[in-house]
Image 1: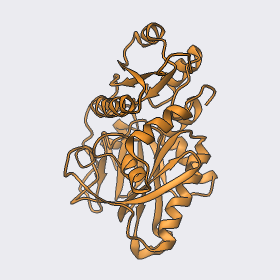
Image 2: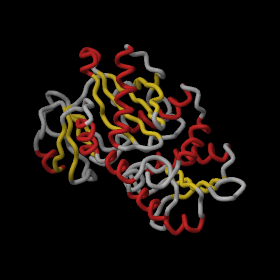
Image 3: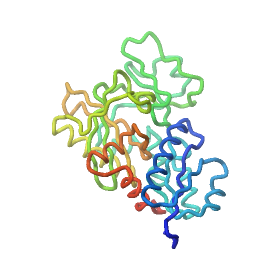
Image 4: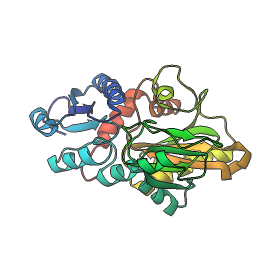
Amino acid sequence: MSSRASPRVAVLLGGPSAEREVSLSTGRECAAALRGEGFDVVELDAGPDLAARLFEVAPDVVFNALHGRWGEDGCVQGMLEWLRLPYTHSGVLASALALDKQRSKEAFKAAGLPVVESLLASSADVRARHVMEPPYVVKPNNEGSSVGVYIVHDGANGPPKLDEAMPEIVMVESFAPGREMTTTVMGDRALTVTDIITDGWYDYDAKYKPGGSRHEVPANLPPEIFDACMDYALRAHEALGCRGISRTDFRWDEARGLDGLILLETNTQPGMTPTSLSPEQAAAVGISFGALCRWLVEDATCNR
């Protein structure tokens, strides 16, 4: 930190990814909370001139509120390391590994965590034939927020008609049935478990539109399942080398007990919007939104 009366925090938001609108919301909420905590806050919409703008602003800390590619995949983290600016959340390697769904899944398997079978395939092949026995899910290998997710149900007449905007290579994974749950890790502590209740698939609208889903926090689960979510989330955070906060998502097939609990993915830049899960979990264990944002700033370093 510098000798300024109030440390200056540059909040990075927006950016060019498919999750730009969510990032704008996250960034504005976090900037407002940090101002409430007494920080001197500058909001920067991340564009091609970001390095020059950071040089002009000369922040003490960079709060990374970007989502998706470029902001969450190690790219901006590498730039911040080069500029020697302390920043929040995970570093270069953990960020890149977590956003690459297939490689992160391999890291989870190596750590003994339960995941479904998956493969990488070309979008052309996926449009042409079933590359896996239905039911299965098709998604970009390096986007979050349920962007571009297709579910192919059991008995489907043919392969999915993927949007032309889908990347050339996609991930195809076995469909995991059951309840959707999530756990946030803050530092070396798993906070709690949320049961996400929706009328259908937990898609982009269910995540970000008010009323799109209901969150039961803490989740009403058998102790064995609740404890396993907490344990798996912390182990996933550690397996990827995450820093700051992360959020790990699960599916649980109640009929199969503990064997029905599947780890879906880990998000190194969890949303921090009014309907977001991680701030809600922090509040459930007595950590206010302002205190959560302050903790992230105080946790910020280089060499992450």
